[in-house]
Image (cartoon, rainbow, N blue to C red; front, side):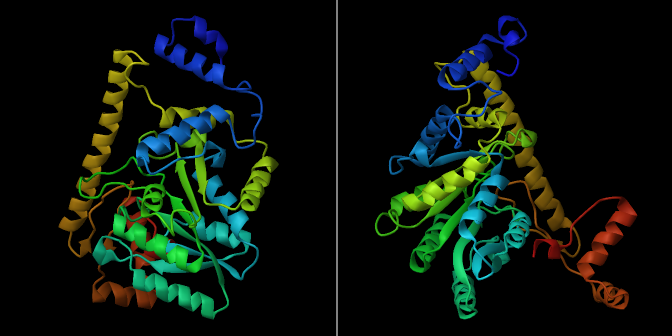
Length: 372
């Protein structure tokens, strides 16, 4: 699509040519032009809606008009925060340990981060009592809670939320009129049968009244993660659920400022949600795609097990089981001697540990304080 002359050559397969022709016939503008809708190509958003419905089952009816294409999930977060935050009195709850994108954007937009803590003893699962306490404390301080960030599968913890945790968050948000910002970019990275990925979209729809028609949800996905790992293409989307028409209009205005996300990333998002399938692409194409996908997944699954097992075999180190995403969040237990040295050097022990590691091994690490 970027170099049309290649279509007539033998450099790409007939399946690839067919996909290019399919995309071209369904897109209102060529790759080098702005899309006619600032939300992105209609055909791509329709493909994403079908993907969401196929993923989440009959309870979900995805409206492609509520799907916005963006330059990666980080742009989706940025747009969400622009929508939600007005001043320092507006707060967003962020899980700790946290992916630092959220604290950085909150600082940039002038909002207040309200931390809630994941429970390491529950494999970094939710502690609903802690969330209730944090909400009360925030309200006592005059903070207007506008949203809660949920990262599932977890970054940097590698956990996968169970259905009960998701239902608890939905109930809390219904009770407190809080928007859910569901960062679900690692949904393809699930390494255990005992912790399947379940989307917030699915659970919200299946919970029924009074939740399914009232709790506001923004869910995000990206080609940067999963098994694609196409970070540089900057493709992704977010879907809004149960938003007031006025709020939807404001999102559209925000997207219109940028005119549209990059069109190469839009096509990448379409390919992510609509991979080769039997009956449309050739058997050889489907077989090759399946083989490559499974090879990437199995390699990541193997490394996830190797990493957590290795950490747990080390002295004074322990790590929860990596259920999903691409991360481990190990705990290092410092000896009294190490703590004394850190106190003498007037630095946090985890910072001292990281500095010692880079000096002795060349390996760069981040102290736990970097994740809150």
